[in-house]
Structure formats: structure tokens, C-alpha cells
Length: 113
Picture 1 (tube, rainbow, N blue to C red):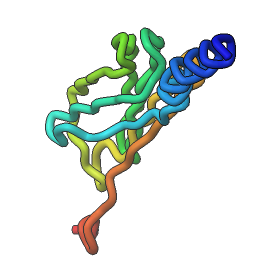
Picture 2 (cartoon, one colour):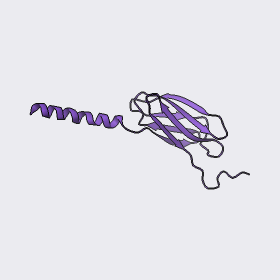
Picture 3 (tube, rainbow, N blue to C red):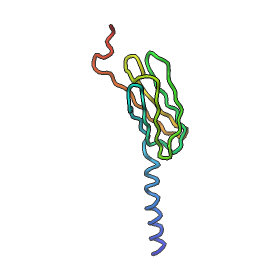
Picture 4 (cartoon, helix red, strand yellow):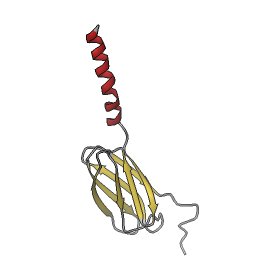
């Protein structure tokens, strides 16, 4: 009976670890100008490449290392702008974590002059 109780206690102790390991990586825009992106749910100390894509400008890339809690903050010297600036941000970790976030235009926002 003591062995069964010890085994159940071990399983109960490991459950929170497996739940935290399965959390989903997320990105959110903390500030649109200049663009600041925050990531969470990545693997602890994971090396991450954060890329910002735009329609009419070159690709911007930053490399970061997540904290022990799997979080990071990246600042770009550009603004989030669906029509003429950065439209999408993607983060890919070496350990397999991935997340992305994009800007969506308001109706008629990108009308040509």
C-alpha cells in the first residue's frame, strides 16, 4: 500500500511538469511604434529567431534567448503598419517552438492615393 501511495505521489508531482512542457508558444504586440513584441510559452533558455516581414520593405531579424520561464522581448527599429511597414512577426526556436502574429488592416486603410 505504501508503494502505491508513493507511486501516485510521484505521478502527481510530475503532472505539472508535463503540463508546463506542453504549453503553446505565443507572440503579442506590446507596442506598434516602434515595434515591441513579447513572446511567452517558449522552452526555457531556447535560442529564438524573430523575423518581421513587410510588403514593401526588407525583412528584419533579431535573435534572442528566452528566459528560464520561456519569455522574451524584442524591439525593432520600425513600426507595425499593414500598408507600408511590418505586417507579420514570426518567432522560431531551435527547440521547435514557433509562434506568429500579424497586423490586420482597417477597411479601406490601404487605399492608393
